[in-house]
Image 1 (spheres, helix red, strand yellow):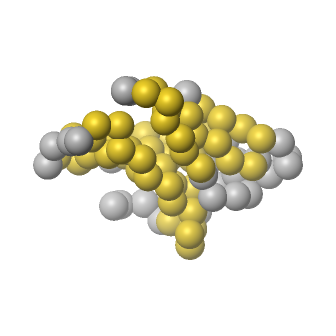
Image 2 (cartoon, helix red, strand yellow):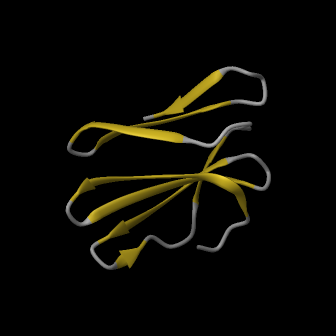
Length: 81
């Protein structure tokens, strides 16, 4: 998928039958996002920033609504809608 991953630092969620969102913590501890729509991956990883010390967790509360969270290196809970 094109970016250096930390082991077990990936979360994925599907929002519809043909859409997948993948979140990862990369080697610089930043949160990144990539999506699959139908059979096409988005180009590159979106850098969502931050500095995380835990793997991401992601949840959905309806069509096209999701929230991704993780523990920051400051020990705080950080999230992105």
